[in-house]
Length: 293
Image (tube, rainbow, N blue to C red):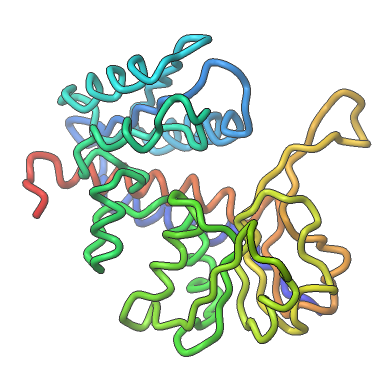
């Protein structure tokens, strides 16, 4: 049997940590500002989950929609305004964004303590140096699932599919970090990897961050591997005409009885990512007024 690595109990544990950090009835509730495109995208699902999670925890939530046709200058100015606002403790920027909006340049304007998703150059640099402040919520969530289910990575062969600066690369850096939670032997595969099955040979743990439905199946996943499905794609829902549903990179039916463990989509990394983000907001709030070194 293939073990189902359900994300809900992992998310519950992170929520408990967030509540403990916030305490009861704080005098100035934390505030998260989420900057996003006005039109519906895959991020819209995450946006709705952010708002619901914040409301349950007593965290203020500000939905910061850009104009219908935003420019890079508008994005930078919105971020600078939020960065200067003392009532905002954490800022999240939708990603990926259209290339012309210069996501990297815009997030670089955020102070690292407010860059709650750890995607700005300062926080990524700290992660490379082994001195993380904020870690991307999805990357944090993916590793929290393994820790919850006591699946070790130290000394094991781990392959990460995808090299984006917001998901794949941070996961790889966390796996490489010294200490009991890292020390993995990491391989990174990506869109220019010519033979995926060959690149995955010998992998004991796989993280797939591609966004390609059904990419992983018995033809390329080693038997008994642990698969953490970080990918999310919206596809037509055959059960509901004109509706869509979220799916991951894994062909879960094909891997049943083949992989030793798989995270489901939905219900795997998704809910843990939201809980990890809220914990990051509480951590940013708890450090308010402190100088980051």
